[in-house]
Amino acid sequence: MTTQPVTVTLQDNIYEAAVKMRDNDTGFIPVVDFSDGNTLIGVVTDRDLVIRGYAEKHSGSTSVERVMTTGIRCASQSTSVDEAAELMASQQIRRLPVTDGKKLIGVVSLGDLAVRNIFADNAGAALSDISEQHGLH
Image (cartoon, rainbow, N blue to C red):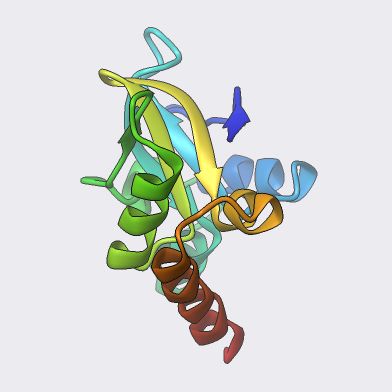
């Protein structure tokens, strides 16, 4: 799990999110509440920026709120690695925020699981399918 992931708030715009993605070599940034800096309220992906942002002709000064994804699946501190892998497989997601209540404490990625080879066989096969499906684009 990546602890202390790079984040944005609703006060940030899509240009700032894109720069953070570039500078931190990521395609996924959690959106947290500005007032406390750690309450998870959504995520912005590189796909969100393209599809909901630039492809809809929004300028770089558009708030991340216009393009972010809400209602996301999360894991808790007590979620096992196998459970996280199963959730990622069943929901076909590559990155899973880890929270303590509503507080963001980290992000588990498909790469985290694959590199460590610590997920269940069936979840591993499903996660492999996710990677192959996205690799076709």
